[in-house]
Length: 387
Image (cartoon, rainbow, N blue to C red; front, side):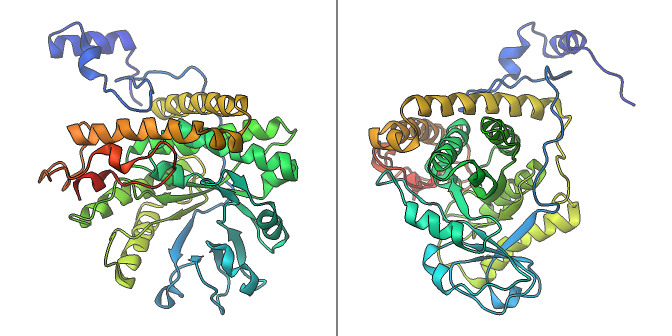
């Protein structure tokens, strides 16, 4: 048993060691998410109950390869593949729906979003086709796009709720049981872990508005935003931390994008997938329901993110909902402002990318304003400025 140290006693000890009474200015680190992070936690105001997930064991999803057929139990398909047995099949593209051959011993999940972010429209025909298909989960709410475009965490989750509510208004509340929330996991390990937990909180809160008690099915993939063409092996280190955050945070399925951004091969895809295998089989972190529950730091971050995200959702609803906010340009401008701020932190070295702006420091080749647009949500990697 550890002896609990009161906050006041901790402050006195640190003041003595740092030889200053103003310890918080030295120990508090600024962040772009607007979250308050304390250097020490001895309690949490409102402890949370365990935040469950839907899958008992997180699916480790591989891009389909013949040589992984016997080693992977979940595949992401971008083309029709026959002969797969006792697998979890994640379908990534709508154009294979009509040729998809269902097998009764497989489970099928759609990672297909029915929103067109550029046109500001919702395809009801595609949504209906997906709802009529033999999927365990029928429609994806894709906010991985927004993370890769530079959106803040609260923006990503607020947008996820706004898109969800838009579907409920069209297809009814039972669609809450048929959705997958597709997210991308960034490099801020504890923030991203808390993001997944916060998503569960606010999705459940939204479902209660419709007299349901649902939790989201979460498909988490590694981000491309912090990846670089230079020293691509560094991308493996980044994505390993992202996968760990996804599993510990309680995602139902995880997927590792190829760490090679160019000249990728079947081998590089296999290596990316086997990151998940090492984490799951060596650390067994894919089986816990809510491993970080009880951590004062994570609990506090979770609740801050949930509150920020819910407020952003309310703001979007106040502007007429997600589609109206797209058409007015609100969503695009909000993401643009956040993305430019993040890019400036990379440019000035406040965000460090090994092999890009540190060890060695590459020369900047493009300005942030030429990379981003206020009128378009598009994926931009932070390293593109230097490539």
